[in-house]
Image 1 (cartoon, rainbow, N blue to C red):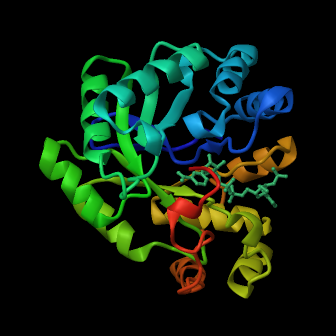
Image 2: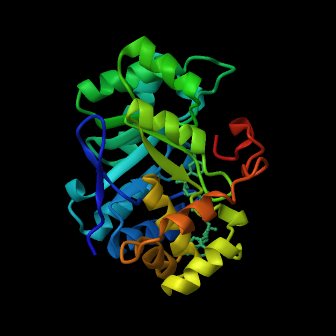
Image 3: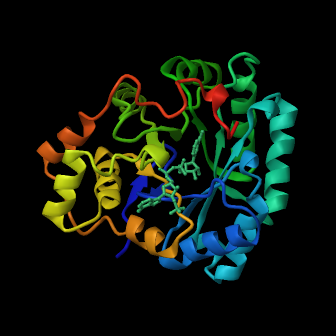
Length: 278
Ligand SMILES: NC(=O)c1ccc[n+]([C@@H]2O[C@H](COP(=O)([O-])OP(=O)(O)OC[C@H]3O[C@@H](n4cnc5c(N)ncnc54)[C@H](OP(=O)(O)O)[C@@H]3O)[C@@H](O)[C@H]2O)c1
């Protein structure tokens, strides 16, 4: 089944679901990413900090799918926020990927104690003008961070990739994104190791629609209008996670899953600094 797409504020489109690649590396990583492309994912989420841009490039080449049919995303790490560093970082990403352009490039996190994310953002704006990056966005930005870069540059990020799963449904940030015209992307969309597969609203909906709990959660993401990027090293789960466009949750089911949100629902104690990725 064809994957629906979302039109971004900059006029480009992204698939309604993508594939997360952390922590897929080495030969097994290439095989897993190649499998994801073969089962139909067309948005691949990488980052400098995942140490797997070479693997992503290799998987694309091995898959035989034309490069222009795949959307490749990477991220500038917090240590590369100075303007020149951000430009250099992006050229190095392209070299590792073996690609001439990125479809989406994000500031991985604001790294607020260094406070140079506005420079990284200006670099992304210039890289887009140079054609090295098609769409630009951010990750783990709060409303305050978003307003600051928009005010400084006059350019609104096309995407903000944030932690979003049933225990942390990001109701406020989704409203901020809606108001600013930013597409939400969901990291750890299944809830990673705390996936709420056995929670009654998830398990009941799975039973009712004849799908798996993972498919219910990803369908909930799609109906929220956020782009989930589930990671799986397993071809069978990759296929299952992509197959969420043949059923629909009703409003009560969506609301009941959103209501699983809780104050301590964040996976990393609320501080991206403590996240192993960054
Ligand atoms: N921007 C950021 O700061 C940030 C932070 C974290 C993550 N990310 C991105 O988001 C992507 C996804 O997040 P994530 O990997 O943390 O979490 P996730 O996608 O929610 O969960 C991945 C885990 O769930 C398992 N899994 C996948 N599909 C399943 C299914 N259908 N049934 C049961 N288990 C399943 C996977 O195991 P198997 O592999 O064994 O199937 C893996 O252990 C990352 O790969 C990365 O690209 C971004």
